[in-house]
Image (cartoon, rainbow, N blue to C red; front, side, top):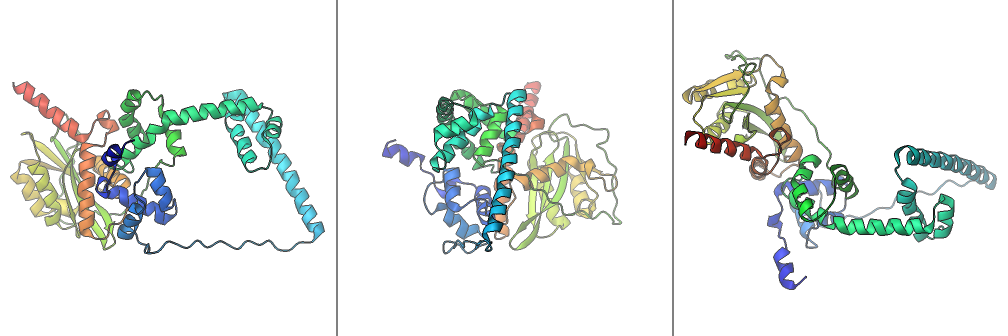
Length: 413
């Protein structure tokens, strides 16, 4: 690679999203990886790039390198007779364990054709050889395979590793914007690239690859109640029992969820289009006042692209029943609709959007409200423009919203 190409491919800190930086900082401080491992796994350039993120966004003191304290583990002194008994017992246990593992491997090879002996046990033999615990010839005899099997397996593994070498960079490129995007959606986005590069990689093997490279993500679930429904204000009936959206902006669903920063708890109000799943309006505030929640509705109204009757569906929260919110709906000819009682499933779509944002984007504490506001804006843009949905046929919310606009235009012409 020439110096000109290296300069062209060089990344700066601006190339990484805030969500990605916070995810990496949290993983390192949790102990899932060291900062040097993070640089290697995600291909981050620069020796001090990750340390800079840790010092800026981390909760620990990263002004100096952490000290590693080795645990003390001396065994209690034992007599020669006690040592012999212990070793005999351990030897018997190892013999039985050996018999059991061999029988399990035989059954799997016979019933499922897994080829474990040639594929994985050969790797173990090579590892023990490198540790100078056993020769490769002796290991092959004990495992009932030939040395040629080990050599062939290693050649196949090396060839496969070379074939899959571009995959990690492809994954990291998407993860820079969507750090916790699910494996199915990730495979959908990358499959055309696999075909272009001539990489044969099915979905199951893709998940195995992510697991081996430590690139799988675990879901994070939490729940905090943000709705107060026991109030005297007028509550509206549920109009969605008999209505299914057929086009964008026929139904808006709204909800409030909490998000945290190091300053405390904040509240995010969302208005989402039920047909395209596009977030039409949002507002982040320190309180759940109706005047704050209505700002999300104002943004959604300003973002409308169609002139059609709209239903606004929400829970029976105080903010949605308030005078200021209902006046805004009436002024824009939007019909109010609310859940019956306390059944959260009657506003499931809004709850689902909350879950996607919190489980995939808004996962880590920001330092203050302004930093969190930037993260929310960035996350909603990526959600609308880049994240595919299974329910939308793997299209993004904005693609579905714009596609309907084109159809309407063609119909009038």
